[in-house]
Image (tube, rainbow, N blue to C red; front, side, top):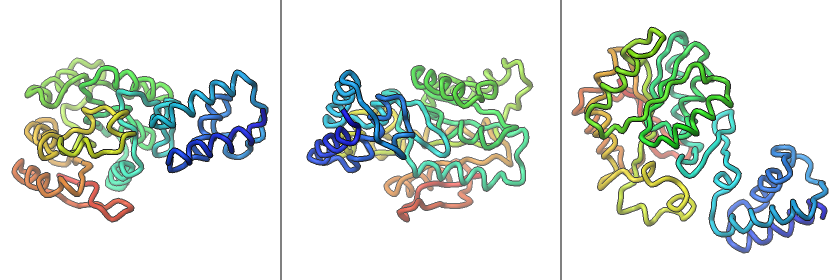
Length: 294
């Protein structure tokens, strides 16, 4: 079968099922089946075998059922790179790229010997993107999910930065989480500093009661631990700021993602912890999205 015909037919199915970008979804899925990936965006006149057609139609059924394209093909674009994702990692969002922009702007005069800590790293999209931009930096990734860290290691290998990445399987609700990080630093064969220059974090910040109102593609296919921020959405912020000073120096910065619903409480948590908010950043929609903290 000709790919044009197959794409048109499948796009109609997705459109009928109220998918927001049916044509694009179909092109990505067919490209995945054919092993062509991005090439299909530019030239979609391909011969599709019966076996390939059947495989593609199975993927279309998954998409109709609500499974995100990223979770079907196992990858998602973020910053300049394609990251491997799975059911244990939160899908990278475009608005989270703001964290990278903030860090790079802050460090534009200092780009050597930077130690970065990525809290709740998931796929590693934030930390690894920074690592690619800062060739003389080192990255420590903390996540309580071992399977998410496994995916991060695959991404670090794919991006050829594995030699500059350390992973730490710790939960920030463990009251000794900073001590465990320091222990990891001291055990390393490299002479790492005990303090981090940059901490980046996109913690779960959705109120528990609001999880049920999320889009099905989020609440059914993104890990709950990466979404649920507790009663007021701020449980993780409290846990982080209760101990974070132990691994920071006077010049360190924290770049933190927030939401409109949590920013007021987060400001209080930051102030109570003895830190200062140096800047508040808005995303493309005009909503408060990130904080630069010292």
